[in-house]
Amino acid sequence: MIRWQNLWRLIPLWMVLLLAGCGDPTTSALRPRGPVARDQLFLMKLSFGIMILVVVVVFVIYLYVLVRFRQKKGEKDIVPKQVEGSHTLELIWTVIPIISLLILAVPTVQYTFKALEDHRGNQDALHVKVTAHAFWWQFEYPSLGIATAQDLVIPTGKKIAFEITASDVKHSFWIPSLGGKMDTNPGLNNIFYLQADEVDTFKGICAELCGASHALMLFKVNSLDPANFDKWVADMKAPATIPADAKRGEQVFKDNCLSCHAVNAQGLGAGPNLNGFAKREMVAGILPHNDESLRKWILDPQAQKPGNKMPAFGPNGPKPLGEQDVNDLIKYLNAPQ
Ligand code: CUA
Image 1: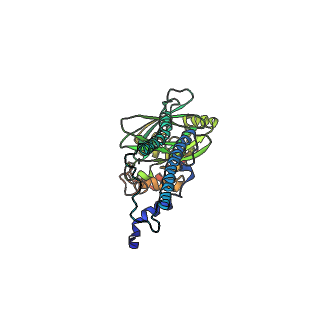
Image 2: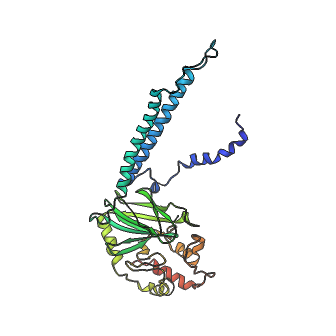
Image 3: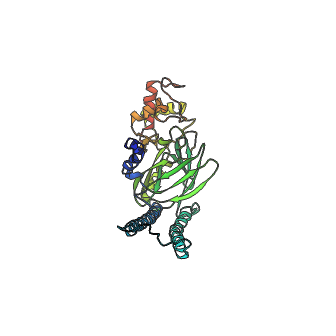
């Protein structure tokens, strides 16, 4: 008997069913935007197809048996035909699962090995080294001599040969629209590739519980057509020209921030490289890019992303900055260069 008062136990199930309809089109493995993601969606559809087929066949047979062999009026104590040890039946229910598993396994193994191909030495591919830090992402382009953070910029129509690792704990690099995911392990380099079809912006996420701000360990992926990508590379390498009204802010930055944050083409530090920061879409990967977000972040980064390693520069921080300094710093960071 169903105890209706126990139905609340099913709340998680209802929530899953309700939330399954939610989603951000820039973060969906069901809306593939590149060949690897399409291969992976094909595998998902194939496995779902096989599962649904099995469920349908089993239910049809079950319902047929229920109706066909039910006890009719006047029938009593009928012993059905005994089929124990039937070679035919045992062959059928052994061979069919083996065939369905083979249909699933062959393309799965094939696409898995394909996605793990190492294209680092491939002239037509772009090599990108990814390092996951709690709670931000560092991207290096060894063949181009540039490094950046939080906004991954890639050309369209080109294989991106990822070499991924972590500096602290295990994270997982995932761009649902393009494929993945792949663990980032300290001391290990994992290799795989992804590719974007068209000019677009996607969301990247950390898919491994890694600490207090795991859910905030987000990044942006901008796919640019090859000409615009080359322009972005040239901009990243060009020496910055600091507008006159941002010079004071540059000095505040040098005195307080430069020990962790590089602002040149390929510098790496304890914090994200901020070269080209003014053009990034987000602050810290989570806040909309504007002066107010930047102020919140500088004054109290822990309030925005708990557990991150940036010290607060607000009145309660170890090295409080005056209001003028903060304003100048924001002007410098957001200065068009
Ligand atoms: Cu990094 Cu979760």
